[in-house]
Amino acid sequence: MDKDIHNEIIKVLIANESHLGYVPVILETIEAAAKVRGTGIAKRSPEYIEQKMKEGKAIIALAGKEFAGFCYIESWGNRQYVANSGLIVVEKFRGHGLAMRIKKKSFDLSRQMFPEAKLFGLTSGAAVMKINTKLGYVPVTFADLTDDEAFWRGCQGCVNYDILLRTGRKYCICTAMLFDPSKKHRK
Image 1 (cartoon, rainbow, N blue to C red):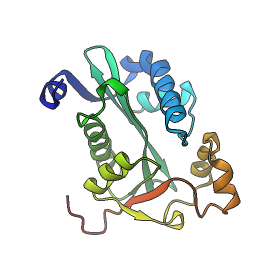
Image 2: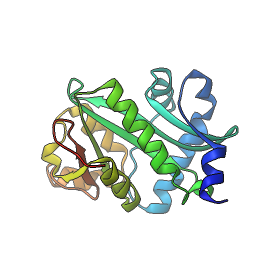
Image 3: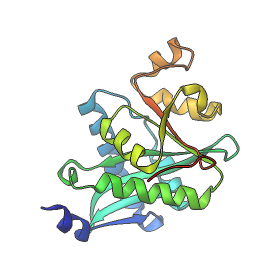
Image 4: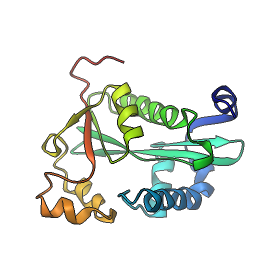
């Protein structure tokens, strides 16, 4: 399928309770992607993903009724920091700009819900780094991210967590990226 056909067929929506049935396939897709890449994607429980959907803090992409992609929003440090996490696109839908559409929708929703917050992400994927850069994120050190312990506990499900511990949370396989709304950005 060419890019234009994909964009017409796949809808990128704010997830809600009507999408709860997709939670198992979302978690399976995240786990499969982590295994293929051999890098970390923090594991989340079904209840956690369900809660994000119920709160209107998740983005889902659907090709008709078929699951195509997902991302969710988390806030940290008394809402001073927001992360768009768990970005995933089903393999057969990759290469057509869907990840950018999902991330952009999540970015816009984050800015709407938390207009003063700094948006950040940790990624080991070049494609996500490229998307983040287009949205105005810049690479930063881990010290520039939230110091919220709940966020860092979320990394425990990652296969590279031992690296993060050994370095005193200063370094890991992931690259930290930050969008600061108080700074001028080009898009």
